[in-house]
Image (cartoon, rainbow, N blue to C red; front, side, top):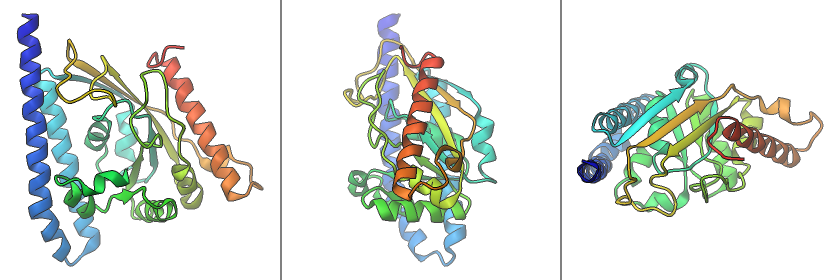
Length: 263
């Protein structure tokens, strides 16, 4: 029975990845050209954000239904509330699925995407049609993120820049989210992510299916104001460093407190 369960989850994972790729390619080839000629930018982005949210909600529901993954979320109401009050979601990044889960939970979201992904043949159109933000230029990242926040979109940022190096370690956070928070005045919403057993990590491929269904846990913490973390007379660069260090320490401490990290 254990072997049968393993191969079932392997096949289900392969089918899910195939469907994900086909849908992404279809979106890029069909929806992106339509988005380019859509006359009203605000309604275009709103519709595309809703489509992406609905697609990832459906994909997560399927993965849970076929017993590939389990999902527990604490504080999801805070992500829904941000549909009326934009915030900057700052999360650790243990697995490739983190963005999928957060987009499925956040109705009105925009992501910061690593510049290397903008040439992906399956998803280049999705990212452009949704007005996602590239991290290629740090100054433009902050400016573009502030514009999206002003439009009412919650920014989803993984400040490690890539998946975490190990289950109990984080990469040093980049400061883009801190500059964005200080410039826009938007609150920072720290989010804890955990996957047990590890799946789709930096060192694993899609077919490295764990011995049992992986358990994704998401904990949304209370919002934090960037202004409260930095001294009022600090210059912007120093204030951003202070906020970044404080948020990384805050997330790390809660990862330990929740048992996601072992001290």
